[in-house]
Length: 392
Ligand code: FAD
Image (cartoon, rainbow, N blue to C red):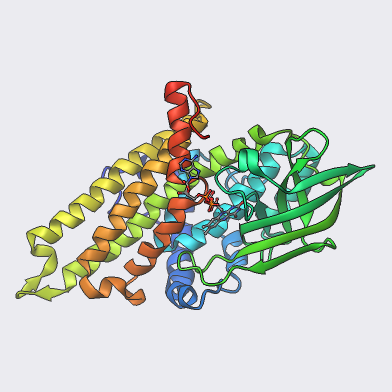
C-alpha cells in the first residue's frame, strides 16, 4: 500500500519513519478511513462501540505493535506514536479503546508481569481474543491514587481476596480481564492483579451520560470478596512506583492522541473553509479565518515536535516521568485551543456532529483530564524541576 504523507504534518516528521513503518501506517490508515470513519458519528451519538471494531483493529495489527511477545516487526516508539495520532485523527474514542487495551492493560502485564504471565496473556490480547481493562481510579480516589487507593487485597494462602470499587474504567463493560490495582493489607503497598471478569463478586456497570469519548464504554466496577490466585498477581508490581512505570508510557501515547485529535479537527476545518462561501468567496480566503488555521497548525506542529522527541527518548531509554508528563500536559492544552479555533472556523456547523469538528471538540475534554490531569502532570514536572513535591 502506498504511503501518502499527511498534509497536516507541516514539518514532515513522518520522514523519521522507516519504510516498513510507513507501509504499516498506510494499511492502518486505509482500514480506518474505509471501515471506521464512516460510522463514528452515528456511534458517537448513540454512545455505542461499533460491533466488530476490536477484531478489525486486532487484524490491522494495532494491539501487537508494542510488546516483544507480539511485535510483528521491529518498530520505533515514534512509529507507535504515529499509530496513536492516526487513530485519534479519525476518532479519539477509537484511539482510547486501543490505548486501554494496548498501553494500559497489555502494558501493565508487559512492564510488571512475569515472563510466564507475559507469554500467557500478551499474544491473546494482541490477537483481540482477550479484551483487557485497567482499573486504577476509584470513586473517592482519582488524582491521588498513588496514596489514596481504598481497594484492598488480602492474602489468604495461595489466594488474594479483593474488595473495593473502581470508577471510569475504559472497555470494562465488555472486557475479559481487568488489571486491578489494590493496596496489600499486609504491607500497605499497591499491587496489581489480572482479574478475569467472570470471577464471582466482580460486577461492572456502564457510566451513562458522558459527553466526551462517547464511543468508549466506561464502567463502575464493584469487587466483593473477589478471589484470585497468586499466579494472577502481577509479579513485578511491588508498589505504586511500578504502576507509574506503566503510566509514563501511556501518558506519552495520550500526548500523541491529543495531536491526532487536533489534526482531525484541523483537517475538517481546512476542508470546510475552502468550500464554504461567504461575501462571495471561500471563507478560507478571509484573513481572520487563515489566522485560525495558521494558529492551529502552529499548535499541531509544536506539539508534534515535542511528542516525537519524547518517543525518541523512550527508544534511547532516557525518557523519565517528567518528560512524558510535560508532553501530555502541553499537547492536551494546545489541543483544547486548537479544537476551539477549528470549531469557530465552522460557525454554526461547528457544533453539528456531521461536520466532525464538534466530536473532536467534545472529545478533547476527556483527553485533557484522563491519565493525569494538567495539574497532576504539571506537579510531576514541577517536582523534577525543583526537587520539591507540591502534591499535598
Ligand atoms: P480529581 O482527582 O477529583 O480532580 C479534580 C480536579 O482537582 C482536577 O482538575 C485535578 O487536577 C484537581 N486536583 C486534584 N488534586 C490536586 C492538587 N494536589 N493540586 C492541584 N489540583 C488538584 N481511570 C482508570 O483507572 N482506568 C481507565 O481506563 C480510565 N479511563 C478514563 C476515561 C475517561 C473518559 C475519563 C474521564 C477518566 C478515565 N479514568 C480512568 C480516570 C482518570 O484517570 C481520572 O479521571 C483522572 O485521573 C482525574 O481524577 P478525578 O476525575 O477523580 O479528578
